[in-house]
Length: 73
Image (cartoon, rainbow, N blue to C red; front, side, top):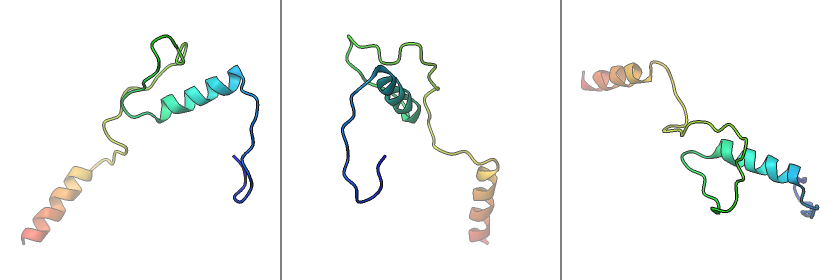
């Protein structure tokens, strides 16, 4: 990444850069990754399970239920 206000630059592509990019992309995906059927960009990569939600907060359902009941009082 370059500093704000500076120009982007071109660098020669390498296998290491491609693998790093594919790994970062895979770990940021939520449900699916699409690629050309003749490519195998995820070869050897352990992938996370699909995510149905972004965050989890223990006790959130109880907290929301208590808030709803307060509004009804």
